[in-house]
Amino acid sequence: MVDAELSLEEVCKGTTRRYRLDKEVICTHCGGKRAEPKSKWQSCPSCGGKGFEERVSSSFFARFVRRQTCTACQGRGEIPQQKCRVCRGEGKVRREVDVTVEIPPGMENGQQVRVRGKGNAGSEGGTAGDLFVTVHVKKGQWLRKGRQLFYDLKIPFTTAVLGGKAQVPTLEGREEVTIRPGTAGGERIVLPGRGLPPAGGGARGDLILRVQIDVPTHLSRRQRQILEQLRREGRGAI
Ligand SMILES: [Zn+2]
Ligand SMILES: [Zn+2]
Image 1 (spheres, rainbow, N blue to C red):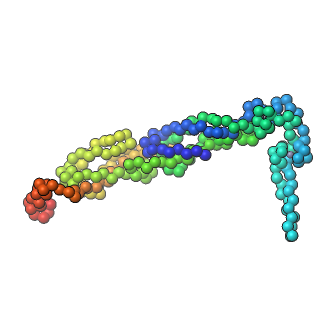
Image 2 (tube, rainbow, N blue to C red):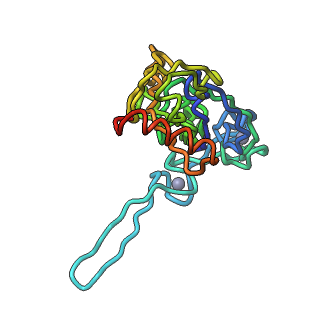
Image 3 (tube, rainbow, N blue to C red):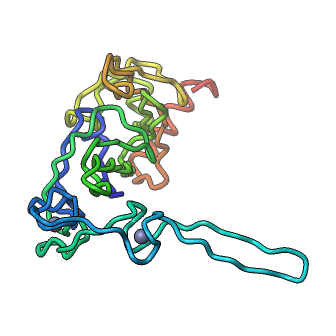
């Protein structure tokens, strides 16, 4: 189990991560069989060849028999006369392995990518387990809801009234949008296809700008005079 921290840009396009894993891999000398290649096998002395041991425990009322897989032969009932000298009879060795994991587009925070056969080796030369990569999506400048991205766009009140241009961050970089004259606070401007693809890829959602009007708190004397004149001429309606 490993983790991957992704930016929203990486969620959009998909990405790869490399991991150096300290993994259990099958011993190549014995092929996971735990014996020296030409060794003979003998009945396990620990379990008498049964492959399991019985543990008896008793209480005042009852007697319990628990069966446990024999640890000496790991349930096989026989052990090699000569253990593999490379893995010392474990069948597996630890090795550092580099694994490259493809993370597809559209992953949600907390989702996992399953990589078949890249986990630890199974026993007795069995198939290896799976490696799970847990995705953590870093918070970006946008709020993400599935395929949609939201961004609070602050514009000066003069731009809201007169119209103009504004710069917005998108996954592709900064982009200029046109603000039409008479834009109200809370209005939404939709940039189609600038959101994220669904899990597994597909058409991207939208980037939705929520307009917020920036009201100035500090005005110069002249700015104040201009606004007061505007108010007089607007007769209270502006
Ligand atoms: Zn045994
Ligand atoms: Zn071995």
